[in-house]
Length: 558
Image (cartoon, rainbow, N blue to C red):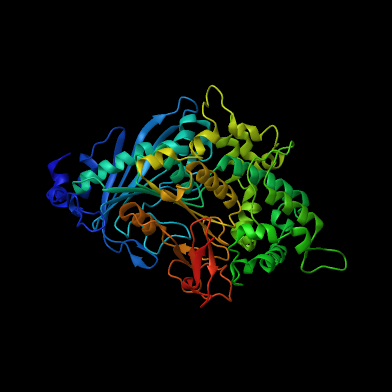
């Protein structure tokens, strides 16, 4: 470490000792030293490729300018695979704000990764108006150990699978902390990791594998058992394909008008279970008992063509919501709740359009999650692979290993200590998990079942270090007829740093005029700024009187 790089904050170290992270005046780097990081920062297996200052207002978020900062790009663990001959590296971007708040945020990205997304700590749909960078966090984003051009064939390299599954944070987080030390003259006082979808999964995996690296973990719409849910997506596509009038368009099996019929039937039985008929099904457990597809949705006949579903549609719905099973009746993945969010285009994208798209389930299952992986020729006809996938012979490959791929997909993708999270509890870390009840691919039932098991194993102390919040109507990561805008980052910081466990998180609908982007699925009869409390499971937001559009009219109760 050179004196030049350290001088920005070294003089404050003694003055700041013992001061709360939330109140102290943190060292502020001068952007003039930014370029020096490119040549003078050293860390094992790390190569900085550029370091440039970014002026205030050069970037913006939700219509507000992002403050001045330094953006650093680089590569870690560069190597050539002995298996597929491809060059791999953990590519990264770190943004260092001039108005630093003393914290680091590891931005866990979604999908099959491969892209170094802008390191601003933003979230899809459910994120706050001010992202982590605007809040003053130093932020790191990585590509998970491979490039977009290598998707999905990075799955042919066993180390690339592991980097994507869990290893990238173990390498990149210590490097980012060292870079923060170089820029500010002091290490971050607190470190956080968060993301949605695959990013939510990585946050939970890190809480299990890397509890020592972070103080707080934020998992939104976590892909908790992604290989199994992806297999379920293939099997669901087969069911819809079998009854689709147009075999090139799976949505023709269950088009928007039919989905609206189902949503209205669910609302008729379940909407008021929480005390308010407001277009939101809050009480999922109650709805499971109250709603019966066979009884509550009419079967179409030649004489009945409206407010009905065909016998074939109802039969597939029962199977899809029951979750995928093998021929012996053993579950491969979990159930899905009936929810009015079935009307969401996001629901349709996952259940129909993208279930057989080359960028989603077929290639993930075939190349990243199966041992051995598929031959590259599969890319020429992913639909054939999806529709020919066999539940008994192909699904077990997500649990398989061989001499080259010594870790199965269910090992490198899922948290290894799901029932207990012992390392997280022992370290004193905190984790928030937030999941939409209408997620069409990663079921909230899976997340809820995990939390129930965790609670049983922890003897009632789970809420001391992990809390689950469910978002009624929200589809995958965002959208649906829901209040999907909330700030979980501030809630997590308050819990980690001030010991204030979140009793509720206020969420807002993104109706017309919302600065963070409008959710077109907000019903017209809702207030554009409707608010609701997200309640820690197992409590529910129950109506206690007052304006039905305001969170204050609801209390979190069993």
